Image 1 (spheres, rainbow, N blue to C red):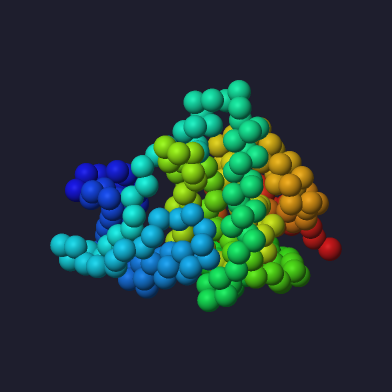
Image 2 (cartoon, rainbow, N blue to C red):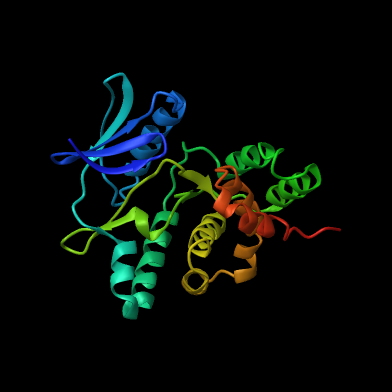
Length: 247
């Protein structure tokens, strides 16, 4: 097997027409099984995603095997052809809206996941802000749309025929589409504010969603990103969490 990528607590290999994601011994078994379950449930919606092939143990480590997709990420294509960035952004948002048009009623609920993440931030965010975040989250409308949870151009592979394939469904939930859009905006903003602004303008235009409504989710998704405890992101994320409106 050839190594494709190395991530924290996992190594991704290519094995012929398959991708094998091998997890470290300390990665929770429940998270691995949940990722495989998410993949299979999203696969049933008919969206263009790699098919799940197996969950197994390789050299004492849990692994997930799925179809390999030959191609380039949309992130690479955008970087190589900046003059057509708006065109690619339109296609990116169209694909996200296609995802959000689906339902997978057995997936975990986005609000439940966000509440757990906010509660876990006792060392990063004080109790007053956590209370305000919980209150804001509880007040947001409940929806049951399919949400990717990490929808960004690096998770879209374009094959040789120009067909997109969406990968990495480990964070998939069902919930409010604007929460997922806020998450995507945050992922862009951590790298490039101009691209983030282009994204949110395009998403709100195509989905006929008020930008202010998506922005109401930003403190919540910023708090959820803090859980990853990346030092280079901490100050930026905390500045967004503090956007909470106090009475």
